[in-house]
Structures are given as C-alpha cells and as structure tokens.
Length: 105
Image 1 (cartoon, rainbow, N blue to C red):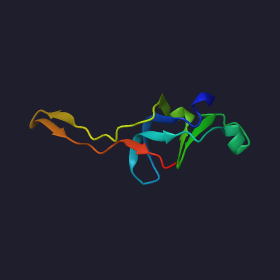
Image 2 (image 1 turned 45 degrees about the horizontal axis):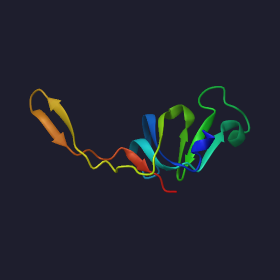
Image 3 (image 1 turned 90 degrees about the vertical axis):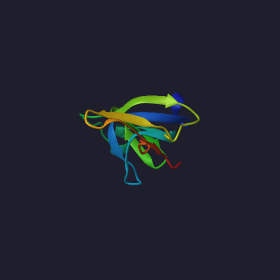
Image 4 (image 1 turned 45 degrees about the vertical axis):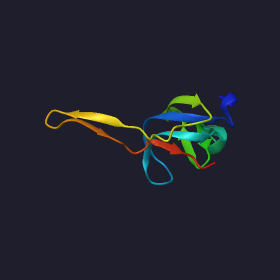
C-alpha cells in the first residue's frame, strides 16, 4: 500500500458513512495523505477490526471498511441518471445525489 501514498484515489466502502459535511456517502475521492498502523496511532494493536487506516485530507477511513482502491487522477461528480421500477407507476428515471465524497486536502 505504500505505493499509493500521496496518490489520488477513489475508495469504495462496505457501508455508507458520514463525512465532515454531515451527508452520507459510499465512496471517497482524494489524495492519500497517510497510511497509519493502529498500533502507531493508539499505542497498541486492537484485537478486533482493522489494524490500519487511510488519511485522505479531512477524512479517515478504516482499512476494514474499504472494498476497492482505484488509483485515478479524475473522478466524475456523478451527474448521471439512474432508474427504478415500480409495478404500479412503471419506470422512474431520476438524478440521485452524488454518493462520492470529495475530500478536502
């Protein structure tokens, strides 16, 4: 993982999370500012959960919460359409809010 330090990445997570702006997201985009072992941050290694975390500007993501890390210089701010089907009303097309948090580095 050291090769990703200081790289711009898109990180997808297992679950929704709350970002510093108070909204919930499922992914984060920004530059990895540090990769920290829990024993260095806490002084001991936890027996459960992740043993490391990513710092991405104003956001910290625990290692055990991460699905994928994609190294990329750009990230689309989600200006797209999606749809859902309802048996009573048929197909509904709409523009959902962006589920990617853009970290402030």
